[in-house]
Amino acid sequence: MNRILRIISIALATLLFSHASAETKRETLVNRLVNSEYALEEVMSKPETAIPSSVLKDAKGLILTVDYRGGFIIGAHGGFGVLIVKHPLTGEWGVPAFVQTGGANIGLQLGGKEIDTIYVIMDDDTIRKAYTGRFDLSASAAAVAGPVGVVSEANESNDYNNANILVYSTTKGLFAGVSVKAGWVAPQNKVTKKFYDTHYNTPEIVLSDWFEMPQESVSLVQRINYYMNGGH
Image 1 (spheres, one colour):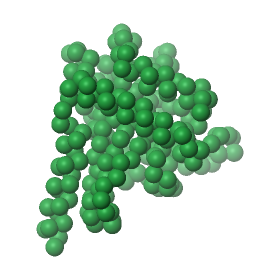
Image 2 (cartoon, one colour):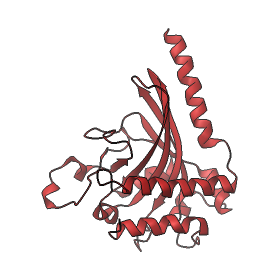
Image 3 (cartoon, one colour):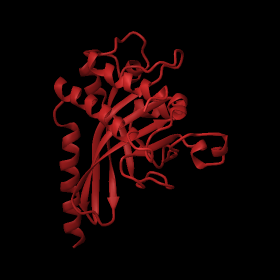
């Protein structure tokens, strides 16, 4: 029985990850940018999941993902998204890079599910991990559910003040009160280089001030700035 479950889990994981890594045509990548903006809109559309503007102002970077989960007893999740980082000197959002996500789920899970998730990165060290290589959300960084609503000094004793990553998801209660488990994020360096038609690698791209913002990314960055400045 365990062998059967293992085979099912591996097959499911292969199916999920193939969606994130199959084609890298420009139109496919542009669609990822559109979906990332949609994921942000979905998270921000409800008071119980919306990211406070003060959190976005303090953030060093964002990972916006569309994640696919599914399985039975032992499942898997995988997806795609973009990483966007504030320039350390200007504080302006830079150009986005492409990432993929994955992990394992244990428990009763029937069918598949699409989940929009925003990872708000709060420190420079985690930013470096995000654009230089795969990092585990439970081992490499302290990821916890982020605060919603108005954040004030009264919240200072909460766990999220010491977190490296604050997590916001369209699935209510998914990360509430617990660390994110069994999940990872990795930059897609070749994909990002192809999109920008450059020999530079992801770190140079996301932290640059010489890459012109692609027209396909303008709407996403404008949307982030809109929410950061108090828009609803």
